[in-house]
Image 1: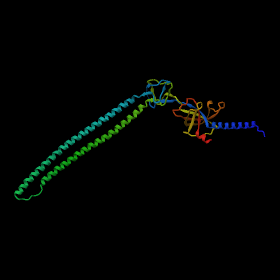
Image 2 (image 1 turned 60 degrees about the vertical axis):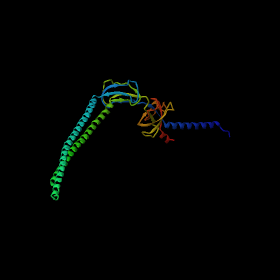
Image 3 (image 1 turned 120 degrees about the vertical axis):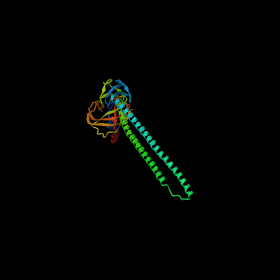
Image 4 (image 1 turned 135 degrees about the vertical axis):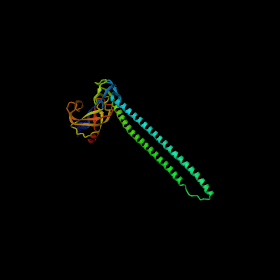
Length: 339
């Protein structure tokens, strides 16, 4: 039997075309298109104040952290002075009270110690006189061969009286000193609490004053602005716009004919449509449930109108895409589900 090579070539061609068709179709299901976008950052002040400094000029390239605008609030300066005076006044009052209380304690100690010393002196003298009387009495009794008649009640009574006075004075002294020490402790606690409140107000005011200095959150270019030196700025008023140097998100479209399953924060693969070697990953941060018409550039067939869902994908600041560059989006989970 003679082999018809024409038929065999035709069959192989059809099979090859079928395989290519399936491969292209699978890739079409797995890959979507988007563009690298750069959303301008709007600079606002959370506080109102007078504009005293505008650092950058329109069109100027700035770096993240650069100072853009400086505002002032006159009442902040007055509050800061008042708070500083309050702190100093509290310290002066506290120091004066402590010094006065300590002086009073020293005076009380001196007065009571003087009285107690006098009583101890009287006690010593009483002991000496009693000892002398006992010696005389002993010698007299021995000369008359008379036995000792016992203890001296007068001496014991006087000695006990002196000891009771000393004990009473010691108690009075310690009571008055303890009262003054308690007042000192109470004043220290009150002063610490009051100082802490003023210092808390100072920290709050310092934080607010820092908010009057507006810095750039990103690298980028300053767009044209309409604010001027010494303008009064109301809170939350738009002051500047900064266009990033690099794209900060991907705006993509998934055709309505594709039943792709994904969720927020899902990871996707991203690559440049014109520079295939440029690849990175991103996170889905929003999906518009509304079906919209796809831009001509992002259609798989530009001649045919198409519709789909709009998705937004976050990309890192270190990406090397160009603003407006066409991006191929691949959803790994969806790829796995269709293998």
